Amino acid sequence: MEPGLTKLAELAYNFRTDFIARMGLNSGHEPPRQVGLVREALPGLAFRVVLDYNQSEVLAYLGGRLKMNRIRVLPGDKVIVEVSPDGRRGRIVRRL
Image (cartoon, rainbow, N blue to C red; front, side):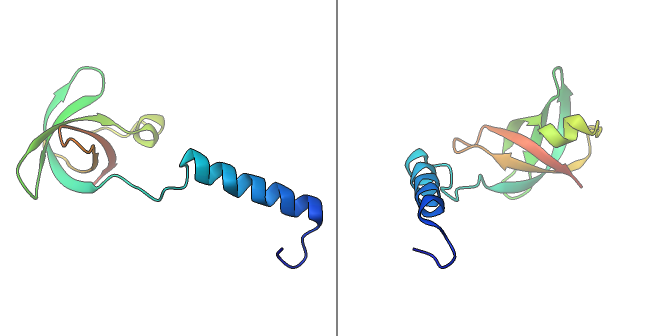
């Protein structure tokens, strides 16, 4: 038991940490981020992005904060993309 916690607070703390561990919500896994160049703008806020490190092309969509703040991304812009495990899709998280 941690100092300063009541028995009820300790039970709530243990339940929360066990739940998070069981659900895998705190796995610490973040998708790899790559820098790329927007080659083509597609309908529906999708873009073809060429990654700098291996010149592969991914189909990327605009991330939520960029949508909310109406950040414009145009062909020729450098962006940071979170790439999916298969390496074919991604999410644009920042415009450089």
